Image 1 (cartoon, rainbow, N blue to C red):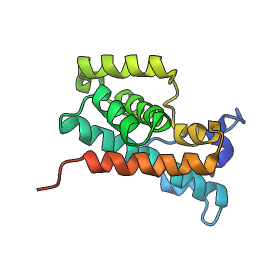
Image 2 (cartoon, rainbow, N blue to C red):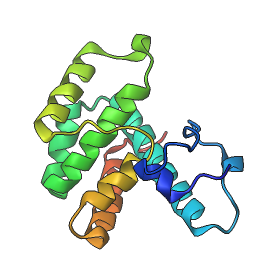
Image 3 (cartoon, rainbow, N blue to C red):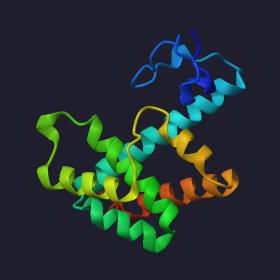
Image 4 (spheres, rainbow, N blue to C red):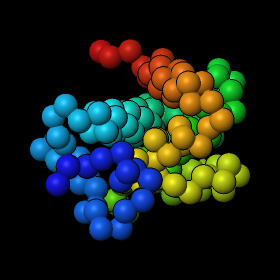
Length: 153
């Protein structure tokens, strides 16, 4: 069964659950909805991995959210809070740091963020007033997060 854009928005209850991490064989080649879905899942995964790498390099959730707000704006801050929540939810209980989890929970509550299910990037984008601006914010936030990573080596 191919995964389509409709699955991002929970519009059909008879669809199978999202594979996680996504299974490339679930996508239909040349299907615009599948291409969109593949892009969304890739961006979501990249945000999650970048947040994880920033945690490893010593950033705190509050520090990341404030830095992104300062660099790009409040909309990007909320996006990063989604990414922080997503990254934290994918960790096992053993891998969760108490202070990190507490800061993520506080930020999510303040921003009203509670959606970190697969496809949240698309839902976040579609909730924005201007989807073109939302796309720019998305890539600007990802770029800013990458800029915060320490140089390799």
